[in-house]
Length: 167
Image 1 (cartoon, rainbow, N blue to C red):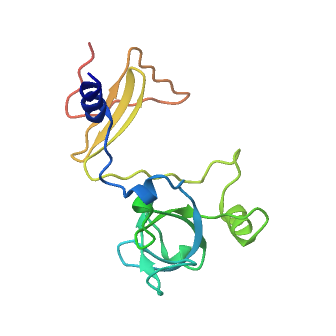
Image 2 (image 1 turned 180 degrees about the vertical axis):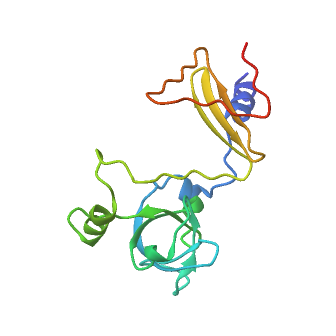
C-alpha cells in the first residue's frame, strides 16, 4: 500500500524541466544597467555589472527604445535567471535628477491639452465607449454608431453627399 501512495504522489507533483533547480529557488532580482546604444530596429544594447560577456549585449525589451535612451540607466531582469539573456524592463527615472528635469520640460501639464493630436493607422481607427463607436477606415468611411446620436451647431449645419437619406 505504501508503494502505491509513493507512485501516486510522484505522478501528481509537477516537474519543472525548464528552469534548472539552482535557479528555480532563487528570487527574481532587478539589476540596474546602462543602455549604451540602440540598434536600428529599436533593440537596446546594454551593459551591467557582472556581465558574463564582458562587453555590451543586446537585450530583449518590454518596449521600443529610441536613440535618446542611450546613456540612461535601465532596469534589467534575466530570462530564466541567465545573465547572458537580459530583459530590459524600462529606463530608470531618478527623482530630482536629469531624467526628471528632462521629462518635466517636455511633458505638457495635466490641465493643458496639446495643440494638435493625430492618430494614424494603416487600416482603421476605432474609438469605442460602451455601445457607442466612431470608426475611420482607410477607404474614407466614417461610421458613427450609438444608441443616441446628437449633432448640435450654433451656426449653419450642412449635410453634403452624393445622396442623402433621412429616415
